[in-house]
Length: 147
Image (cartoon, rainbow, N blue to C red; front, top):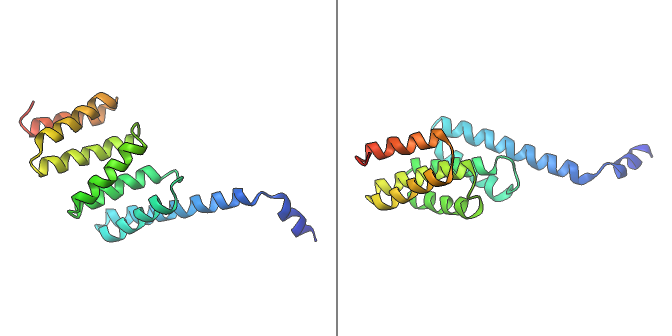
């Protein structure tokens, strides 16, 4: 039959990759909407699913950042720090890692670990050439009374 012949010609792997990507994008959209509505447990569940089940997804790094942000907002600062460390280890050059490092610095400030926060801010300034991040770091240093 022609359908069977056609099916043997079309690479199944391409369809599988496309399905996996659309699944991760669907999960990301649900997670982001949950985060925006303050439904943090739902957001955490969706972002965790993306980073564990879809490590090659185009939204994996962004999902990691929003996962970290969700953990931070819900007061699960230790878990947030664990995930920032994972990003630092695996994606040290990523913009999402830089944004996650800002959350790390906020946690250190909250924990009265000002020197650790300063180290993180210095690393962000030295590593990333993002004017928006540089402005945010400077604002934090002013708020800390250091500028």
